Length: 393
Ligand code: PLP
Image: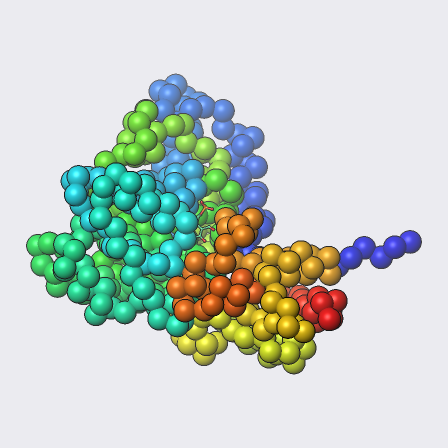
């Protein structure tokens, strides 16, 4: 009988499995709830109570007030409600300052705002993907930015931005302090977060990156921040996200947020050890492998994310998508960058922004660890990569 191919999944920044406790809560609520949380009868009130509990649980885990939590249909939706809502609320010529390395959720909103005539400035980054704070503050002053959006952590290369320092500096801008949004989708559960202390006004999160269900996002909106709702309909979620809430999934997502924040420090230590082990082993078997983004000992990097770059093999430039397909044949599941852009022929905009050539930006693999990843997985994954590269010779 053929031995089934062992598979190793190292693409947890794309999505990660439901945590068992979260799955149990999800199924329990699916079985139990039958009402619409906006209905006034008993079934509706039961659903409303679960929704209220989920909001309290999420707010407590993020150390914010429950009125500041808006449940959405995913991270992209949370980010777009925040950005479209904040810039449009600030007036027809309101300006957005963001960076060149944001996820397409932010870049898509920025492109839409630009089409509407809003000035949009995309700040360059340095060779590891970090924005220069002095240049950022100068740009914000010159352009009189109404909204600033800087990701907390990059999904492709793991660079962590100095959010707390940026938040503090924005306060010095005085009465004209712009609204500060951060895409914190990859940061939740991977880094310690301090929304209030960082002077963040708006932040987007996604449940499926932390062991919660797909299709649930969380928008943190500081009390008093005005948003013009981009979607119109019922008055759910403070009028910001009309449509009947997916209560069982939201309830499961709230538990995922609690568990991810509770376990963050321990998980990060484990991931750092896995990253070190992976990097040491991969250098020994893949000649000329490079680390894109911050060095491993940089404290401002995601502990679970490594972006590998490769030199040409036998004069042939490598293509990340081809590498992903070949690695998959060996049993290893990784990605060539952002999952949303995986079908794209374009080199990663993040690696280009770091100053890499298009060839080098195309020859990249993103490896990301999750709660279930073990040292044995790392060992097997390196062996699978070794075989992948052997097959290229
Ligand atoms: N922002 C970042 C940094 C991400 O990595 C992702 C998901 O890949 C998103 C936003 C979008 O989240 P969702 O898939 O929940 O829409």
